[in-house]
Image 1 (tube, rainbow, N blue to C red):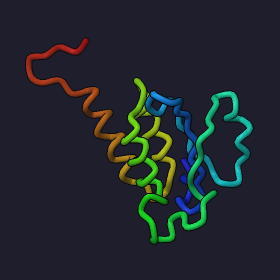
Image 2: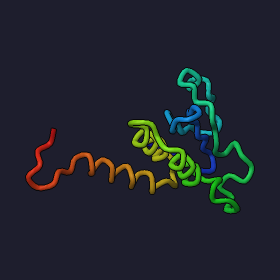
Image 3: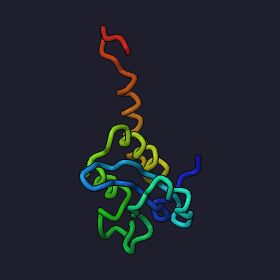
Length: 116
């Protein structure tokens, strides 16, 4: 899988008022958003902003945007989807590591517990 450089990434998501993040997509900056309109992904961040990943503002990074989303919360099942999308970013090894941890957690059962 080829990864997208953080400096060239666009982050799209949907969050309606009073709810957590409901859907996320990470795409190259130059890719049209048209295919995502049906999913109603209306918020965007990333290389569309001046100062993105220039080292002057930690909130203008993929990790900063993910942190913002964490602060808003995720609807059921969306955290793993968000990490999967952020894992597409070349520099986001943190997302790939968190995704690996979630996957391990889902498989792990303490001694004596049977999986469902």
